[in-house]
Length: 108
Image (tube, rainbow, N blue to C red; front, side):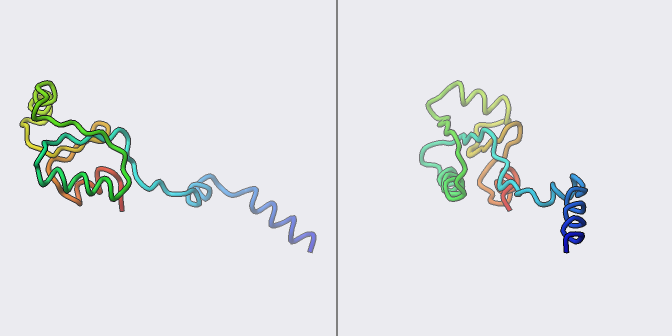
């Protein structure tokens, strides 16, 4: 019995880092600094907020209609002022698309 316990201890001590990585908890999402560019009254923006809230994603909201700097940023970096746009780090999704948002935020 003592030999079996010792053998088990040796086997556990020699597990490769790959085995340890497999057993590590999987990250639920990859949300970094999520920003929602939106316009008040926009139904697609409301759907996007509901999606983010429902998936417990922390995000900042930027209303572009009365914010000339944000509007200029949207035109410069996204080519138009169309909303909603959700950014996550350096990636972005334009419009409300659940599949696109799930991919952007690494949600299964």
